[in-house]
Length: 364
Ligand SMILES: Nc1ncnc2c1ncn2[C@@H]1O[C@H](COP(=O)(O)OP(=O)(O)OP(=O)(O)O)[C@@H](O)[C@H]1O
Image (cartoon, rainbow, N blue to C red):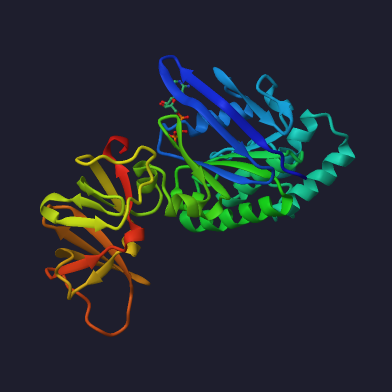
């Protein structure tokens, strides 16, 4: 089994007056695991349905390898598909469910039984061939759905929230299994999820969608460390935001006035945005909670009052209210011994220069 490249070229689709996907372009490499991540209604399922062939794009084209498949029927696209609700045939046994795509394609009986056995062994379901779906757990049903999608050795596997119906523990176990399977088979996977942790764990790259547009595509580390927009910064991981106004803008210095909360001076313009900032422009600063450092002794820095301390095993998160009313989250490693700052304490914090992302507010 080998993965194929998938090229989405300026794809667009509206439902009547509602645009669902707008001029979307992504090139997916053979064997890549790409997740489509975005809030409800951002166009993930519509995009996947166009790749599968169940929705017709209004504009653009879809290529798999060197084939333009935009007008090709779904069953001729060499694509396997797994949905959230396993969509197994309830009256067919596990083996009959997995055999179905091969029977539809007119494969000979001996070949079918061999391929079904191989597919069931891939998902570790040997011995359950004669059961009906109702006699299986949720995780087992989803494995049958995966086996059925892989049995005809497609070059591309599409998965639409495949683990959405499972509980957290089983979901995490299945994430590892699916990733292992994908890597060992070398198959290309396009995976829809609205769970950012799932996307970060499983993906080679993540495409973040917003209102039908592609906001950013990159590796999990790219999106986490270098978000292109405030939306991506907010959507991936936890982020603090501080709104302010650009006061001074030298070649090597940027001063942001946070109103009653103070002033932040950055050594240069660490700006993700394309157009340069203007003096007087409203900006949004973004800093990860784990990049901020508490500093009890330095009250020249921005300070606030601790409203709550949340203990989460390996870390503590301090919720700190600034003079302007903003609540900032500062996460520190849990330490043993020594006194922790307490609720009600006034505390300063230090923000390393390279931890700050600056976004023009018009984009936010
Ligand atoms: N059959 C349809 N008819 C009309 N509008 C639709 C249809 N399907 C989707 N839409 C609209 O298109 C937009 C994108 O929907 P889509 O289902 O692709 O989003 P999504 O990101 O998959 O959302 P979710 O995470 O909730 O499944 C939404 O505004 C939705 O209301």
